[in-house]
Image (cartoon, rainbow, N blue to C red):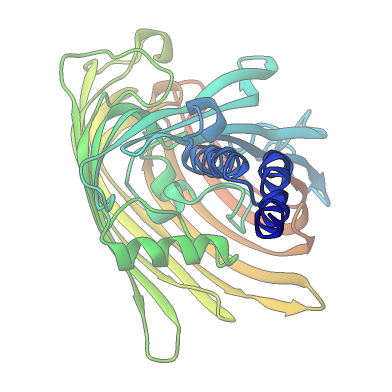
Length: 420
């Protein structure tokens, strides 16, 4: 009997352990629930980490604005430049030259968008009119983004300075010789770009590092566009064609040098509203140019030069008519980039000459331009820069109402730019 009692005593704790088991940390009932909860948490974290952002979350907003005054030390108020800045000369005052907002981003692995209005466009006598500058959409044909097709209104690949953003350019306005080919630099069309990986990385470095690059317009670009320039109705049934080849070489010492060649061909229509009464000539004209570009990036010394030749509409003072005539001209620019205490100072000097017509001006005005501009850009912080330049200019520009007009003079220009 004692043995039986002892056995009962030894057996009695077992139920107690069994009762305590449900509340224990190591109980079989608890372990499955904890594991399931951990797996659920892990799955939730993974889902959050791989969740693709919505298309609107992939867009960014940026821009810049430029405020100018052009009339300090002015010697001739009749010296103007319609293509450059309409606040130059008589009745010019403080002006907002540009006020840009850019919405851009990748809405898909193979599709990106870029939309840029300007909120400070001059239209006739009205100022600060909102007008579309860019609205284009890139479709990438491969995973590495080497090949892409661009649809919409964008810059036409003709000329380094035309492609370079006005927020990066040292002189306050583009030079007449190449910009007269494409005032506003843009048109609507379809363009193909080939950008191999190494070239694409170099194009980005040249822009992001402050070396005044033009951006990625491909090693090779080609396409077709309307030909009447941005924000203007098409006037004929023919398209312009353009092609450009450029490459940013990197020398053994790290110096970047970019070479480029480009050309376009088409037929341009002078609208009746742009022609003075009594001015003869056809409505449609041959419009073609070729150009070469050389850019030695400022590391610290830099040199930039472009030259173009071609044929286009031009007013002939002798016959008071618009004719297809030869044109030509270019510019050369020297610069030096100095960096001290987080600030950047870049002095520059540019000389330009142009002989030819300007197809978007009244009667496709005849021009003879000889101009020298020297100045300095100061960038104390990334969001603000100040530029001062002194211009010596000799311009002959003639239409039916201004035959024999030639203006010479000097003036000092100031610009404050805000980057956001």
